[in-house]
Image 1 (tube, rainbow, N blue to C red):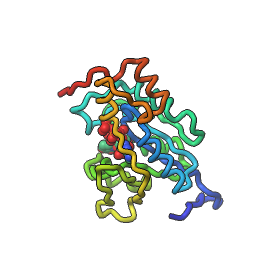
Image 2: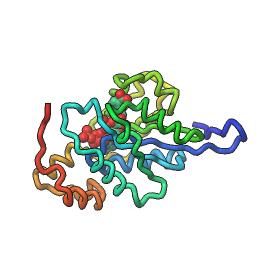
Image 3: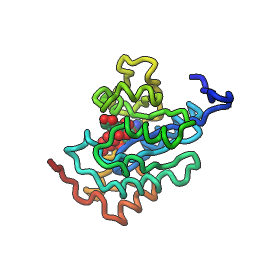
Length: 209
Ligand SMILES: Nc1ncnc2c1ncn2[C@@H]1O[C@H](COP(=O)(O)OP(=O)(O)OP(=O)(O)O)[C@@H](O)[C@H]1O
Ligand SMILES: O=C(O)c1ccc[n+]([C@@H]2O[C@H](COP(=O)([O-])O)[C@@H](O)[C@H]2O)c1
């Protein structure tokens, strides 16, 4: 993939990765994915965007957005290239990536956008709202994830596929472990372990209708 030049003066455009997720909680699988894509695609920054209302997780209990946002801030604070955006949690209603990209494009009009997704999220992308519009707003990067097969869904140039170090970690498993008093040390950053304990998150897992 060639480095795009700014159309006006030929200078290199800021290359901005976007790592969207519910991050309930954020774990090392998310962080490795962002770091690996940043390194391989020479990104200047990766902005983590916690979802507001993840409509495809409507049958699952999701922690309050402020907790998920703050855990994401704690987890990314030590990396100078990682930032966190509130665009999805501050926008009312269900979270759609077409809105995320519109908001980030408005805030960063000079940036080239790369949206990062794991293999599982990518496999559902054709069910996303206004998906035909999102291809024009960002380049999509699908990364491998243990237990899921990675495919470009026949979309070719719209999506780049990337093999990354395998991290068999999920937020679901982290929540279950906390609820069963098992450790999540080294699955999530140390500060996130402390945050979960301080706020008593995930002590009782339950399904909601
Ligand atoms: N271990 C992992 N390796 C690669 N990508 C991952 C990994 N975990 C999550 N991702 C990707 O990160 C993004 C955000 O994921 P999300 O916040 O839903 O985490 P999750 O672990 O899948 O959560 P849950 O278990 O609650 O569904 C998605 O694109 C997902 O595919
Ligand atoms: O745009 C949509 O309709 C859409 C549907 C499901 C998921 N997404 C986005 O995909 C990213 C990962 O979502 P999730 O639910 O796996 O945490 C996150 O940025 C979501 O906003 C987007």
